[in-house]
Image (cartoon, rainbow, N blue to C red; front, top):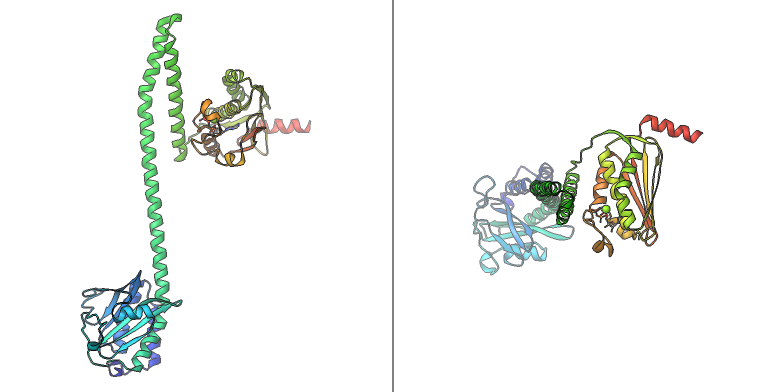
Length: 424
Ligand SMILES: Nc1ncnc2c1ncn2[C@@H]1O[C@H](COP(=O)(O)OP(=O)(O)OP(=O)(O)O)[C@@H](O)[C@H]1O
Ligand SMILES: [Mg+2]
């Protein structure tokens, strides 16, 4: 059908113009529509449809001629299964077909144009068919050898560009899907945190009333109060601790741990914590050994106490009878202070150690007999992070555990005093 070809242009110019126009397109859609227009105009084809292979179907993606009545519309868009019709056969075999008389080819699937002959050329990239360029003519034997050569050449130029545009699109879609999944997960997580935070607050109000009235009844009853009241208070305080710890975990998840910085005497924090836990240690027959340097920090005393209490309480809970807990506070590098809590207890495996800071994680048979919710270490780490400090754990099963906590903020006088001690 050489007659339809733009007579002004040589074949080389056609190929050149086609290649340049491909380079100017950004999206897959732009690329396919510009190809369809180019094939129609420069090759002088009456009709042209570009199919892409999506799964096992060839889908019409761009067209020229009667199939394209306006803008980027495809009239009566059809999908052809691989292996069916002439287009489907070319998609399957990867071989060009030039059918001179459609009236004698039973495979022919009539589309809008309703031609007499058809030329279908595969688009092949990396040895794989990715689509088909298809053209029909209103004349019998409408395509000659030259048309076949030209369409194949243009298909060979276009296929790698289409393949990379398809890959880019798939990548963008995957990224978009990932982003949406991430946003959705964040939304769900926020909703969960908000629900839990609200629930915890709602629980605290009646709980504080229960505790308050129980204390009042206890005080009013004088020394002969009903011992059951103590049970109410113990259970209520336990529940309150649990709610407060849950709230701390939520705050930590949302990076909302706030610090109230003031002057902290590390020795005071350690001795307060030890005093609070002395009874527990005695009950568990564990000895507490304390060695503290004179250290002053700019930090949050309440939060630091919370960390030390949890570490020492763990060292007592997961110890053995006649065991020891050694608590040392000393100056570390620069303006860092270090608090060490070492025990002679049950220790833990490396695998357990790695999961230690996950909220609600507890190990071993002690979880049934020893009180705890697996929140202490997770909260401690978040508090230390907020302080700019760190926590490190080393342990040997059956031998014991060593927890080192480093906190920044040593006051200048501590640093000077400690350096003075070293020199002396
Ligand atoms: N010093 C330790 N020796 C052996 N195992 C420990 C030690 N400290 C913690 N663990 C293990 O790590 C788990 C998590 O500790 P974490 O302090 O977070 O929670 P918990 O003590 O169980 O409960 P909570 O601190 O919330 O009251 C413990 O349940 C225990 O199995
Ligand atoms: Mg604990």
